[in-house]
Image (cartoon, rainbow, N blue to C red; front, side, top):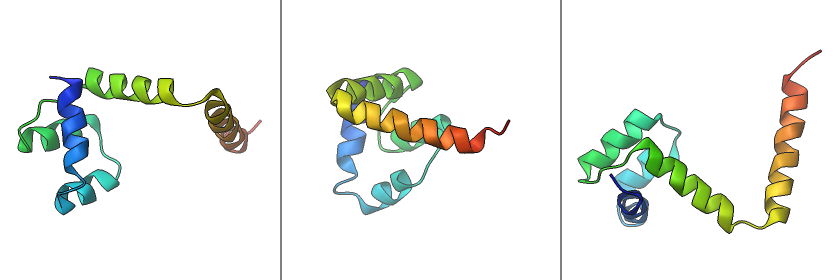
Length: 81
């Protein structure tokens, strides 16, 4: 299980149309792990979390603040009372 396998799987989607189509729709972690295994990769939940943390660390604080503001607005409309 490795973050590198997840990176290779995501890179493969640029040359594999079927993989790109499957990754374009939301999926649960077990489904992603099975998809990776079909392609010969081992991906764990920790790998997905590490990839997300890496992505967030690379984003600017302005982008993160804008995203948090949008999420807060969505929650205000979702939560009544």
